[in-house]
Image 1 (cartoon, chains in turn cyan, yellow):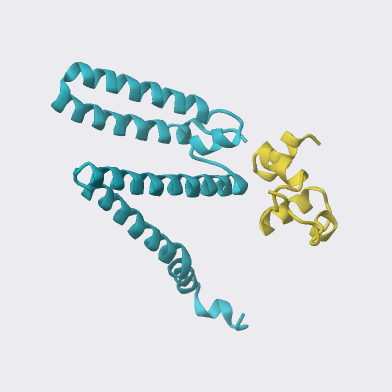
Image 2: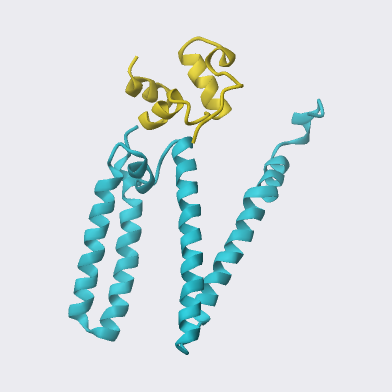
Length: 146
Length: 55
C-alpha cells in the first residue's frame, strides 16, 4: 500500500508546530540560542517522521497517518501500551514530586484529562455512535424489524 | 498472484496479506468477502471457523 504524500505530512507537521511552540517557550525563558537548538531538534524529528512514514511497513503506516484495518488494530494496541506507560509515569512523577515537596498538580491535571478522555471515548465510540447511526437511518429502512 | 498484487486488489497492505496468510490475523467480514471475491470462492471455502488466530 503506498502512503500518499499529503497524509504523510500530517504527523511531521504536528511535530513541527508542537516543537516550534516548545522552542518559543524555551526561547522566552532560556534564551534564543537554546530555542534554536530546540527548533532544530524538532525539525530533525519531523524529517525523520516523514521518512519513516513513507516506509512499506506497519510503523510506516502508523506514522504516515494511514493504514488498513489490521494496521489500525496494531495502532490501537500500541496506543494502549503507550497509555499504560504514561499512567505509570504519572504515578511515579506524582510520588517523586510529593516526596521532594514539589507541586503535584501538573500530574493530577494530566491524569484527570486522560480519565475524562477515556470515559468520553467509551461513551462516544460505544453507545453514542451506535445510537447516532441508528438515528441517521430512517425508520422506513427497517420495516422488516431487523 | 503475488502478495503485493493481492494487497493492491484488496486495498490493504502487504503486511496484512502476510498476516492473514500466516493465520495471525482474522480479517473483518467485508475484507473476507473481498478476498473471496478475488479468488472466486466462498468465505467458507477460504476460512476455517474452527481455526484459532495466533497473536
